[in-house]
Image (cartoon, rainbow, N blue to C red; front, side, top):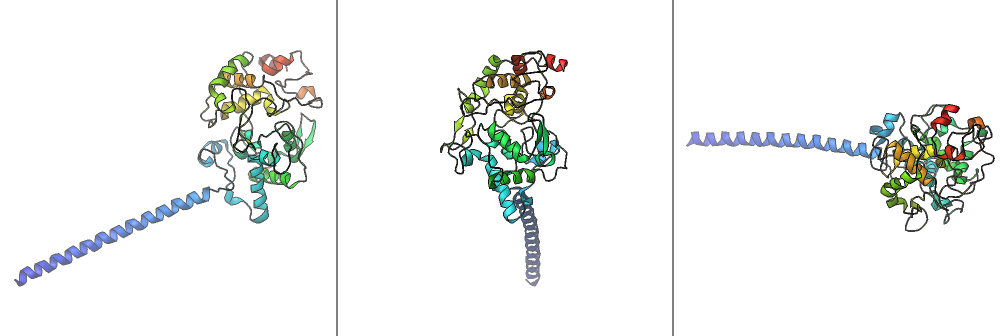
Length: 349
């Protein structure tokens, strides 16, 4: 009896030890899991800011995607200065993203522009690769511009966009809004050395075709890939409030005028190749080079506002090959300068 009792007690003790060991193992594992999850959450928190979202609109983080490969990544919002300076940078970004809400036909501050937003061309608030990003603004301005034949400031360059791409009027250079946009652009380029231009900061210059770009072929591209967002007549789509465009107009009275940079075929083709349809990137383009040139020709063959450009490009030697208005230093026609073929013009330079 006593021996059986002793054996039973030893078994109970052994079982208790086993249970204690299992419990300790569970606690240790649970602790490691909690530490891991906390680290993951903290990592996410340090990479996200709802007020100033400088990540790719699709959710890709630039340090692992396009921007890192191009050598430039927009600053993390955690680097924003505290207080008023940081608030002004955020306000500047807001003005880039929702320009029309402040300066469009129903603008809450002034009515200066056509209803498009700066972000329609400077994608993702000026942070996307090969989409006219702002990485080089702080490092290269003031700079000489051959178009105006003079040195221009950041404010002058912004007003150039207001008058051309937004087909509007100049913004007061001393206004809070102008200063906020400049502050945002300078913050984006704060880590870029003076005089340096990060790779892929503007638009890709596609190889010239051996033929002229074709508006007829481009119309087919537009019908298949662009019409669903920009509309049959290129008028785009306004938001529900009618204050700004969800998808911008590509021609017509509310689009960019013929003095805008995108009215040059090489700029438009390079932009759509790496950015359109929506969601496209230079790593995964949807259009071939020929399709990009042709759809650019179609869109820019459509009617749009005209801007007097008689004061532009006084030095004809510096006038771009695809600038569609004469005079030129060569014998080629305005039509060829607009649609190509561009190789003969380039070879004659």
